[in-house]
Image (cartoon, rainbow, N blue to C red; front, side, top):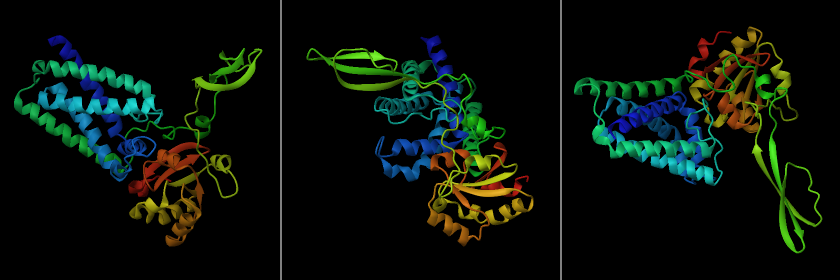
Length: 364
């Protein structure tokens, strides 16, 4: 039992640290995922949505800290009980999401690793087993250092996790796992390569034959059956290749200008997923930044999901010298984790991006 507990201790601790750190690298992104869970289509606890960011930071810091606590053997009973309560909650959440097909990506590993709800539920079940082993064998979890170093490491882990979470919120994620990372070409991320796997669907046809309904499964072709057609159900067996970017658009009220702008040599995009929720201090910096970019020969546009009234208001209120175009809110949130944020493109390739706090440091 002792050796099984130690193996479970290492596996659980490492997995919690990795999972927690990836989300701590992008707590704003995890908060968006929590908002999806809190929404009316999933748990229907919408009153928690305004607190999603705070909950996000607490959860991911706690996740990292518990992983370190477990590895160094700090307060074993508290750590194991906390791990058990956390994994029971997450197991319920992923099962609910998977069974009712509510959330397509659990967000367990942020944008670094996409897991389907059922894959995430399986992962949580494995973790639950490992943590139950720890729970039953908690007496075998001993500190690897003396009391003072163990306490110091635990405290430093907590402080460092809080600092790192605050830092990336005030700037941008230290590691960008998204399709809009520096160096990525958006056109390439939006297209399907030649020879890429195609989606595979399975069709279940129902016919009434001699008064009884019978089902026939095909890959799409109409079955050669003598009988009365009743209906057909389609199930995607394999989604095939899915481009990393699917919904990125730059639209005016009249037309889609995505290809036009992505061919520009020097393009600055000011992202604001919702103008009404923009940081006032950040918006105040846009005028001088856009003027600087225009003087250096850049094309400057805004990208938002907000309506015409909000776009007209911000342009007049802050005397902005560029126009805002339309894009899906979720996409704008993904491009830059800031409101407002900046992304610089050269023929569709991301050259730089910045949080509004760092807008003065952008090298044009």
